[in-house]
Image 1: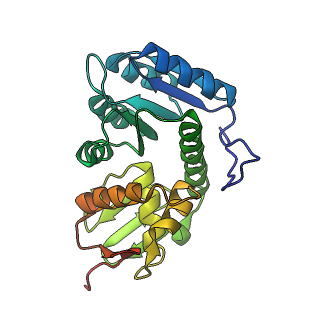
Image 2 (image 1 turned 45 degrees about the vertical axis):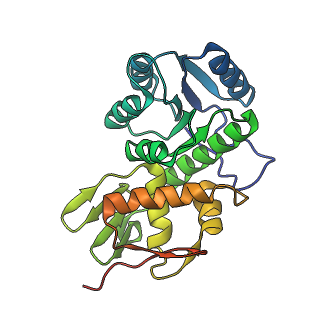
Length: 245
């Protein structure tokens, strides 16, 4: 499937024809989301419990999953684990609690973004369009070959074509968003990048309302790669600075 890369261009419709899986047990919410996403030109399928969500994800291979945390059967965190183990796909989690611990757990099991209920449909659509643009960028990067595909900084090797990351001999498994964030930071080592810049380039957000999202993903990267690679510049942003060999 081909996606339009429409960075910050409201006149285009990213991911036209994309398939979105909605895993939500509240019928009114699930129906409202499906109707709005269908009006955007996306195909939708709804699953009302965790096990059905895993089955649907494996069956239809969606481009993005909208996943509620609280579900009957198995919860959204377990659903996310199982989906990512079978076929990594961008996941936007919906949670009723605005709790950073819950959000970090979600990121830790493979979610790429999260929204707290109640949320606006307009914001949900904007987040999904940004996720689809990232899918497009990933597809374009996978066509990069040879030395151009590799980013090596210290003992960290990033293969953009295969979307694989190694630190030393260990392979590090990242979500699509974590991968894009790491590429952005590692492409300009020792350069401080503001949260607002990272939001614009990685998340395609045009305002600074999501700086907490950046901080949370940085925490997730540190947990997976080690705390010594990314330096915090308080009040500004982050820089990728691996220790001297």
